[in-house]
Image (cartoon, rainbow, N blue to C red; front, side, top):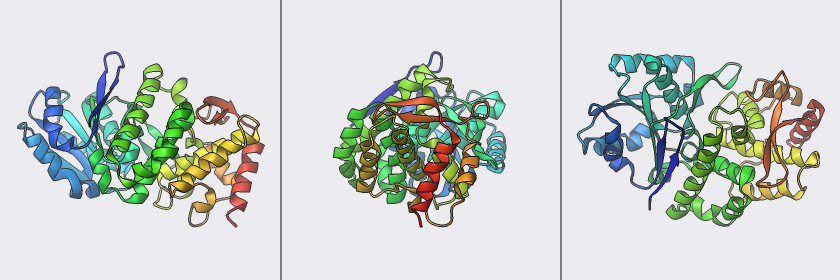
Length: 371
């Protein structure tokens, strides 16, 4: 039960290998990339406790030695201090331009370590071994790396494509349910942005996927990765089509900032709520049927996920402050917000300009529903 998706960027081609048991075979899969039989692995403590020994043994089976740096888990790790820590450690390990750095963890580790690899010696190769559903279907593919700033999420970074991605679907069984479902928010996004048939499939297979059906998990990851690979191949640096992948993110990133990048709201939860808000905004503007946001929310509820602002615990800022936070988003052009909206499920489009008044009304209604 193994699938391979090829990302065919000229001169920077790489494979995304998907299936159970890949950690045990990591040595055989990574070995063709190595000039010397060693790798430097950066991970986080929760992943290390569960899976680092399995990776070490998988590498050792091919005679590959590894050194490892463990960081603290959580979004707060994607900052300047930890970037410097990673780069200093890699230099202390005498990682050369011809060596391989391994990002072993979820999206936070993938983004941070990819950025460290991008700036180390002006660019060293790295391998993504994503251990969360969100990272497997989204952040590990496409070469976006970076850290958060005080002013907003992912505002500092670089495009740096991995040399290989190993998405071991077996490790997903060790994820906490909330984290797994947060990653499912990114899976749903792919059905919304360009494949209504995939959304139909998720409505039918989502519960089995969440319950652990391995075939369903492999197919969900494969389909999501293939969709992302197709978009990245057309638009590597987000000048056009790749902006579609930001469906829900303009709202979601603002909500993450409003909650202090804390466990009050995980990234994938923010994306799911953001997608619901984007479809609601599309419906209010007359772009898509009124039934579509309701259909999306019904599926998210079916899966036990957050769907609205009222599902976020604690105090949220008012609509004006949320709009200000949205103004820090990378999709701002000439000071104006650009949204990814939809003409229906599976029919998203990028670059839509929306009057601030319409966004404020939507946010005020969503906030008033929390009362």
